[in-house]
Length: 229
Image 1 (cartoon, helix red, strand yellow):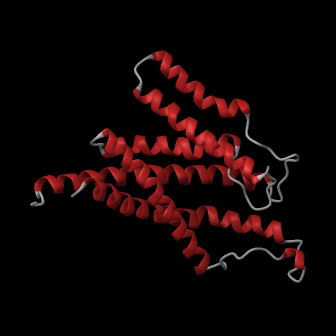
Image 2: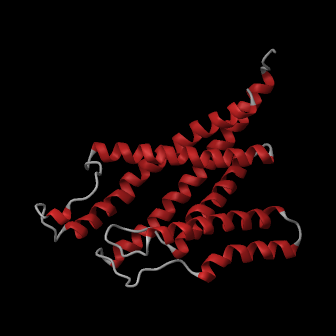
Image 3: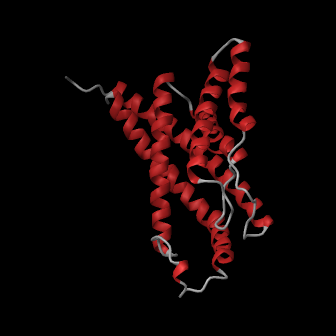
């Protein structure tokens, strides 16, 4: 199998499976918290109030579950492409190595940004969307670069530089709202943050393992059954 097809097929299958797995566990953990938070957010708003009209959103039930699963699968495929591309550059990666790569992805895309911008419930106060997006992107980039330096550069001075890179966005600080407030109880918000991080950590480990197993299996099949040209 050609290298690009191997990479793409791995990302599609592993990403979709891991994304659907994430949607399944969040259905029983995250979604009930979101529903509860939404009840606080809409509790004082009359349905007939024109100010309460919002952009389209899927209806609760099967429609919302479907779109949540679809979104998770798409996100999984995107992250699967990144992981599989990294595997292709590094060569063969074992399933144990896949766990490590997955945890690195979790650290870069979830844990590091959550230090400054933790997962939000409906009704949470937040800074401007553009400011948060810029900080999130920059945090992910410097964390990825910093982790790569720490993992693959032998010099201690470079490893220290990698650590410094990771710390920079947190020293600068994430954009914050003028007033910190939340309609949901503090206990619910805390549980939501930790549960979101835990489910995403599981997702990344599953994705890392699936990408490694499928990528290696396709490579073995290609070597055993070469295509005649």
